[in-house]
Image 1 (cartoon, rainbow, N blue to C red):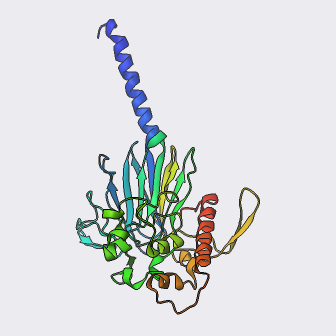
Image 2 (image 1 turned 60 degrees about the vertical axis):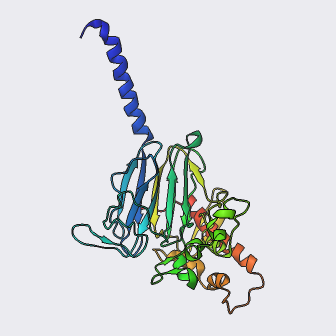
Image 3 (image 1 turned 135 degrees about the vertical axis):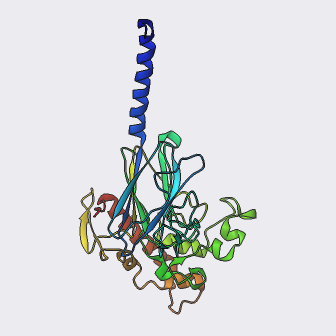
Length: 322
C-alpha cells in the first residue's frame, strides 16, 4: 500500500469503528421473565422491515429468564403462549396465543387471539422508543413491561390483573384460559373500529373495552385508546414479565415521602387479589349482575385507582428478577 493511500485507509477504518460503536450503543436488550406458576412459551414477531431476533419462540420455565438484543429501529411484538404441548422435535401447538407454526419457533407468524401483547417501536420519532401493552386482541395472561432508560417517562405498563377470572361468558375462550375482545367475539364494526367506525371520532369505548380498561388502566383496550396507553423512553432496555409479583402488605414511600400500603400476595395469583369481590365487573358487561350498584361509575374509578397505584409502586420499586 502506497503512503498516499493511508489517509483513505484510516478514514475507512475510523468509519467502521465508529459504526460498530454506534451499533453497540444502539442495541436494545429485551429480557423475558416468567413469574407464573406454569411454563410460558413467549412468541416474537418482528414488524415489517425489521429482522427476526435470535429466536421467534422459545420455552420459559417458571422462575427463569432469557434475553435477546434488537438493533436500532426495530419494531415488533411479544406475547406469552400457554398450555403448549411440543414433542422432542419441537413440533406441537398451544392452548392460548398459538402462532400456528406448528413449532416452538413462530417463524414470523403472529399470535392467534386472544393474546396479551407487548408492542415496541425502537428509535422512532425524536429518537424515542414507543411501547405499549395491548388487550385489543383480547387477553390470555398477566404481563407488564418495565423500562430502564436514560430519559423520558420510562413508565412501567401492562396488565397485572387476571382478567380470565372475571371474563364475561360471551367473551370466554375455550376452557377459560383466555378472554376474547368484543371484536373477536362479535365481529361488528362498532367493536372492531372498522367500516363507518374507522376513526377516533366514530369508534368509542364499549362496555367491554371499559371492562378491560378498568382492570388494566395503562393497557390498550380498543383501537383508538392511544392517549393513556402509549409510553416512551430513550436509550432503554426492557423487561417483559409474565405474571408479575406484587408487594404483599408492604408500605412503600414515594419521593414525596407519602406512604402507601399495597395489598396482595406474591406470585402469579397476587394480581387477582386486586379484583377480590369484584364479580360485578364482568356482570356489568353481561347485564347479569344480581348485586345493586347505583354508583357503578364510582366503582370503576376506584378499580382504576387501585390498578394505577399498583403500577406506580412497580415504577418506583422495580420488581426484583429471581
